Amino acid sequence: MAKLDTPPPFDALDACHRQIQQHLVQLGRLAHHVVDHGIDDSVRQQAQAVEAFFSGTSRQHHAQEEATVFPALLASGNDELAAAVRSLQQDHGWIEENWIELAPRLRALASGNGWIDEMELLGYAEVFLELMNDHIALEESLIYPESKAQWAQALAARERRMEALRHPD
Image (cartoon, rainbow, N blue to C red; front, side):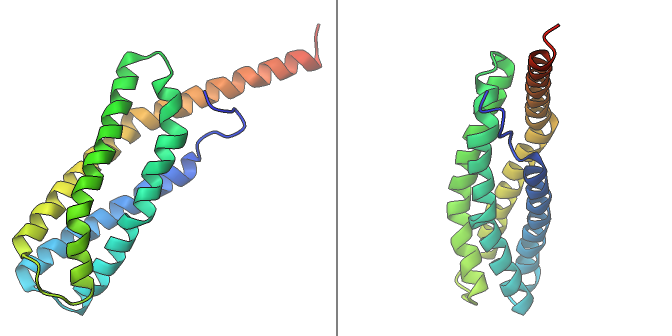
């Protein structure tokens, strides 16, 4: 396990998941709006916000998971848990690949360029939504609870050791 002094920032990670889910809903609505109604000022503003969030905050979130949550779980000796983490790491790659295709289309919308194919945008958005929603579901149902439990156990063991040092009876 990593240093006991620095558990993953679960409150921030959980809050980011909520932000991701809000932006995913916005992306889905945006893509359908473009298909049904075309580009307007609202689309441009939403596209800019969604693109900025997933190009910045969401990528940073994945990097933080890779650095602070995944290593201890990979080293836990639990093969099933390690396989789930490796699957999530692979997801990060697939999400990034899909984002590389989707982001320029959102930037084009944000700048008012109408060169994008609406159905292609919708297709990329739907793949991105599915990847992200499945990814978050696995993290929240298995990975985060396991990581939180491991940290709680490690901190409790540390506290018992500290107590034993204070009271060596």
